[in-house]
Structures are given as structure tokens and as C-alpha cells.
Amino acid sequence: GKICVLGLGYIGLPTASVIASRGVDVVGVDVKQDVVDCINRGEIHIVEPDLEGVTASAVHRGHLRASTEPEPADAFVIAVPTPFHDGKAELGYVWSAARAIAPHLRPGTLVVLESTSPPGTTDQMTRILAESRPDLRFPARDGNGPVDVNIAYCPERVLPGRVLTELIDNSRVIGGISAACSDRAKALYRIFCRGDLHVTDARTAEMCKLTENAFRDVNIAFANELSRVCDTIGINVWELIRLANQHPRVNILQPGPGVGGHCIAVDPWFIVEAAPDATPLIRTARQVNDDKPKRVLGMVREALEATRAATGRRPTVALLGLAFKADVDDLRESPALAIAETVASWNDCETLVSEPNIEDLPASLSGMEGVRFVTDIDQTVAAADIVVMLVNHRPYLAIERESLASKTIIDTRGVWA
Ligand code: SAJ
Image (cartoon, rainbow, N blue to C red; front, side, top):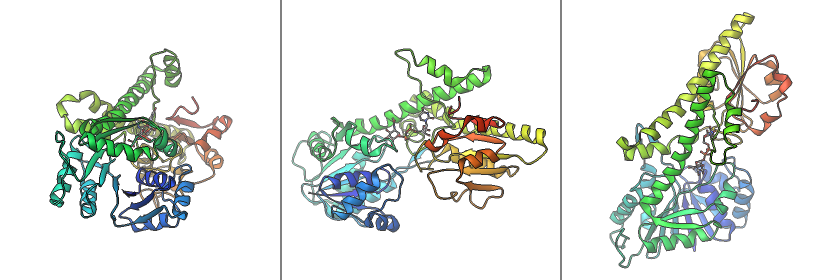
């Protein structure tokens, strides 16, 4: 059969490439013409270890093709963004994808939604498809009569930076609108997934995805709160966590400059939106993590004043890393980027910005007075009065401790702790 994947981003592109690498014909659909052209040349538009090779070989062997329009297929996989704005999940991309595939549905088609979504989204998508295609029979949650189109929710679980391995080895949760839908979806994921495939209903599968990321957010908030406590009472939080984690049932995560990325900083809000009065802990964890960049900025501010007072000149600050976490190029919802933007806006220091995974400053920083993009890490550190470690990218781990001796260090990741 042929598979059509909608959305060629961080999830859709690896998924399309891996399915195509199994010899299945895949057409990947994206609204961006430049993304489509890039993939059709056998190149990729994102940074993800080993992905380029898999995509290139799938394209060159003729199994993967990209297009701006969906085409008839046996299965559709929807992996479009579901952003969160002003306290609400924005599902417009899901609805557009559903409307775009509706004309291509026929008896036997499978539709799987992978995008992170509030509970009930797959049910609503089913209603939209049913309205567009009154000639076809759609599944109902409690119905077991004959249907033409099978629909399921199957959230992705891959960790950016390890997508190819995790796509294949992670277990998955499959929530069909009906049991028959789950069976159909299971057969699709068996093409490339070696992990267990756990079947449930669509709403539980939707909530499961949100729960996994909220769990991580709450646990990072605990670590970030500990870092604040430790700053207040003068204890090394990194050593503290290392020691506490020696307990067989304690496993604390790491403090950082805040929580970024498109998932952990967003998904908990979907749960809060679904049950606002029932979620004080999840909401507070979000606030604790969102507060972290401000606290880092407070430390940078203090270091700038102290340096200026001691030297009488305009200080130079080196900001190491812009991405939302180590060894990725993704700047979306990145606390490091937000910190860099604020430091740049102060306009009272020389700001050297390093980010080994991108080619140049992002639009929000380029052209700003006193801000320079730098590529030589050792020279950057040597030139700085204040070194702010924002992202523990691999190249930074080689920085010699001695080269930092005379500097003010703000180490948000515990690299030098
Ligand atoms: N972070 C910390 N301290 C930690 C761990 C992470 O401050 O101990 C920060 C990171 O620096 C980053 C943010 O949290 O800014 C999120 O990073 P992450 O590595 O925890 O997660 P993501 O966003 O890359 O991927 C998560 C994963 N979810 C879980 O681990 C439960 C991944 O499996 C999901 O597929 C992905 O979200 C997603 O797409 O939902």
C-alpha cells in the first residue's frame, strides 16, 4: 500500500523516511514549497543525527517523494503542528489536513493522527471527515457496524537528537476510535516499529501523550525549584541531586535555564485547559519552569554591574548556546534564545553569541547593536568577562576549565559544577 504523511517536520519527515526505507511507497506533504523541494533533492531541512542518509536513500530509490498536495493513499498519517496560544490549543492545522485528505478517502482507508492534541480531537476530526464525505461510513466509539474509513490516534514519543532509534524501538500507544481501527493502525506501525504496540481508546491515547510530557515538566520544575533553594542557602545543587539520586527510589532531573522545545513547555497547558480547576500542580510546575529564564537574567545583570564596577568598561558577555537543549538546532520555545534576546536588548555590553548547530544569528538577534555571532569557542571564552553556559552542547564540553579561571561563570547546566 501507499502511505501519505502530512507535515514534514521533526516528526513527519523521520516517520515518512523510515516507512519508505522499508520499501513502502510514501508521499510526504508539506505546505512549504522549499521544504518539499529540499526533500525531493534528497536533502533535509532539520538537524537530526543519521536522518539525512535515510531520507536521501529513500528518495533516490524512489520510495519517498514530497509534494505540497496530498494524493490518494491507503493510509494517511497526520503530523502537523498543534501550537498553544493565549490559553488555547490551536488545532487549525489538523482541521486543514483533514479537509485536504477528505476527497482522497475511499473504502479501506486508514487515517492516523499523531499530532499532540487535547482529549477529544480525534473524535472531532472524525466528525469533520464524516461531514466532508457523507458517501462513506465512519467509525463510532461504541459502534461495531461496518465502516469504510478507520481512524486512530497514535502519539509520537521520540526524543529530538535520538529520533531514528526511538522511532523504531520505543513502544507506542494506539487509540482507535473503535477496536477495529486500532487493529488497522497496529498493522501500519508494525511496518517499522519494533517496540510494543499498546491498544486503548483515542481519548486515553491523547491524554497519555500529554501525561508523559507533564510528568517530565513537573519533575524538571522540582529540580529547578531545588536550584533556587540551593542558591538561597548556599549549597551546590548538582552535587545535592547526584547524592539524592543514589537512593534507590529517587531520580531527580537536572535544573536548567528553563524548559523549552515544542512539547514539554506546551503540552501540560493542554491538560490545564481541559480541567482548569483540577490542575494546581501542573500549572505551578509550568510557572516554576517559565520563571527560570528571568532568574538567569537576574544573575547576568548582577555580573554585568559587578564587572563594570570592577573594570570601569563595557563588559563582554559570552552566551553559549541558543537551542532548547543539547545537540539540536531547534530554537523553538528556547529559554536560551529568550535570555540572549533580553541581554541583547539591554544594550550595555558586548554580547558574543555561540550556537554550533546553526549558521548564523536568528532574525530576532541579527543586526542588534553590540551582538555578534561567533564560531570559535575558545576565542569567545577568552574574550569574555562573563561566560553564560546556556546549552550543554557537545563542543562546549571540551572548554578547558583553566581558560575560565579569571571569568565570572553562570553555569545553568552544571557543566562545570
Ligand atoms: N530539561 C531540563 N532538565 C532535564 C531534562 C530536560 O531542564 O533534566 C529541559 C531541556 O533542556 C529542554 C526541555 O527540558 O529545554 C525539554 O527537553 P527534553 O529532552 O526533556 O524533551 P524534548 O522536548 O526534547 O522531548 C520530549 C520527550 N518527552 C519525554 O521525555 C516525556 C519526548 O519523548 C517526546 O516525544 C517529545 O517531548 C514530544 O515530542 O512530545
